[in-house]
Length: 465
Image 1 (spheres, rainbow, N blue to C red):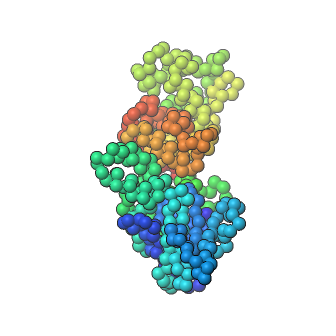
Image 2: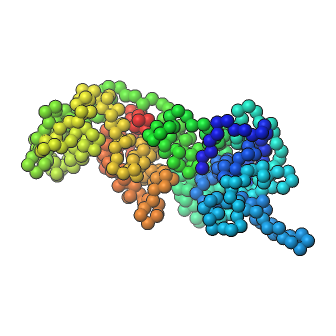
Image 3: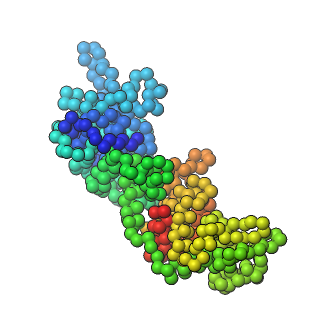
């Protein structure tokens, strides 16, 4: 849930509360100032961001320590109160709706601490203890972190003792499972931030909390009004948005997305050659619907592809580079087939002598022209990796894209995480374009060429389109 309120009324005060993960040693904790009028569903969002969880498991609030056995008073054991989300409320007659209760109704000096449980399997118990209240400055955020220590444990690491065992194993170079655990940690932590159990970026957390409560900006009205990266970020689980935003910044998306004319001409050469060869009058295909053999040979020769090709290179159906170039140009909206001829679209006609314009057109098309939303998301995540230029192996690119697709909710038909071969299939069309532009080199292989500055600029232009 995203809570927005541009004019909150706190009653002039903020609650100051210490949040600690029960059993963590050394302690994982946060000191928060928080609007007491927030309902518990919003407090859940605040805690997810402040602690650093990814909001992928169930949660509840209670006014009783789950680890303490209640004692009878005058022969009566008081039943703990429990507040849950609407989904859990439908299966319970005793629980209370978290949307109907505010923080100050539960966390007050007379009541003692409250507890927040996240992930009923790993049982991450958070103790929220009121330490006081402070006047709310003018325009104060509805929640902010003042201090704290250490990042959140990794999701699904087996609860607090499982997490501590994991850290011990990682710190032991002789541990027999260390390599496997390191691989699991890398996958679980994700490709956008190195795992460091001591890491806590208070400024980044407060930025995320501010965004959570920010009033809608002018460009957030109506479908399609968000930038591509904003739209991706907003679809990420709450706890992943901060890491994703940091990676976007590290990828230099606020850097230049322009290109010199000669560089644009070199990068777009395959598409320029094909559109110019088709020309304003169009190009007749063979009776079987293929490019004429002379055009196939010319394309292979003029683009320098013939020297690496085994075969006569005169039949389009047997000359994959030419076939894939033609199909790519059609998908990108540069050419179409009409009555046995290839003809240029109006966009291609306009760009015949404008390499920079074609470069920008291709950047926009690669980001928006896809047959399925899963292919679009995969393309955008791959473009982000190109913009970052940090990975040197194709397998690492696939892993980063796979992680991002999982975060966005994509799964196989069986509900499993997407395998690398599935991700590669989703990227086939995008890879062809990047191959034609010289960003990648040859078919997907173990290593990836060093991503050069113009290639990073192209990826930035695509992600900004």
